Image (cartoon, rainbow, N blue to C red; front, side, top):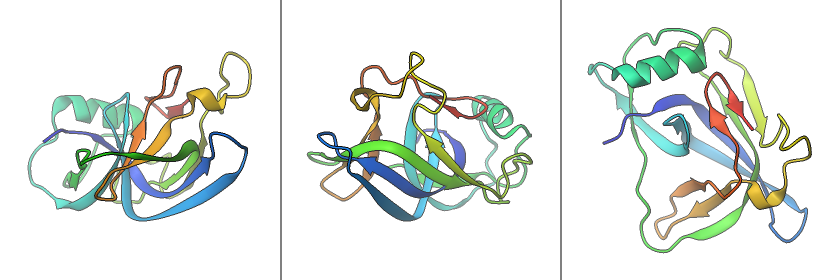
Length: 160
């Protein structure tokens, strides 16, 4: 079991086809966005726990949400890949909310729309060749795949 920073409830992904500029929207239900500081994960929250958050996750929470965590930590399931994967598209943007269950004074309860490359990529538009890919495994689980050249990171905000 890995400990991750819970960013918020993932509600929508904007996907672009690799060979065209066609954009599709994938709406998600009961999915959450989490991070280890570098990579993004699509998880399902299963409840809460009385266990204490590891110091590294407390630190990441404070940096990202600009507040100490309060209340009971979430327990979630971030599945491992099962069988072959299929690329559904390139992630142009993701949309998430930070519900009040997560102590985040600057981010509650707004809808956050993060376009990859919105801080620029080498001073230009974020090229499709470096957008993260969205994969689906044989069981229907979704995964982000960082591609060579991705510059996004998770610190105080989703950047890149």
